[in-house]
Image (cartoon, rainbow, N blue to C red; front, side, top):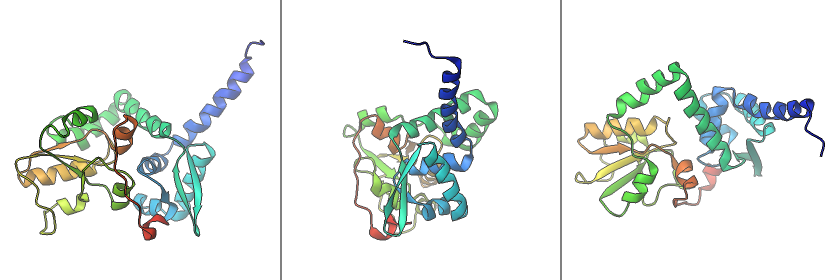
Length: 234
């Protein structure tokens, strides 16, 4: 067998660099985080990021060329999703490396998340071991379409905006149970905002460190609901 030449190795690493280049933009990382929650149309994704549809489409095409996302037709629209679970694992690894390697990232994470948390978040394995053995109330604070695409077993769906002041339409939450809130993952602030609001109302609340993608990759069950037709397109 002929040894791999330097040129051949460089050609291989050049292909690896295409993936790295596709990741080298904040909007594209945000798109991958959103798509880790489930399929989305470009209009919905653009709305979440607050950018134009044309800009979101350009970012999605770059991610698609790098093999990180795939799409399929849905009526007059196209729905995008991650090409595999390894993509969200790659993004999470990148985020963790950045947090441990860059002082600026560590400072931002501490200011925006850790210092406001109050106590360490619950890890997924610990939560799974405690489910059914003690009174716990799980609250998913993501948008409705993400909740329907997959949520933790028995989790209530209360979008984080509704938890700010506890309006009358909110369900009665038991004061003698620990509440665990979660959103999209370790760096998602939706659960943190919900945690702060619920603590102000006198509840005992912890935040789940991981999101549904990490929970699923650990082999723990998720519950799925059929999406509404009006929200499937975008």
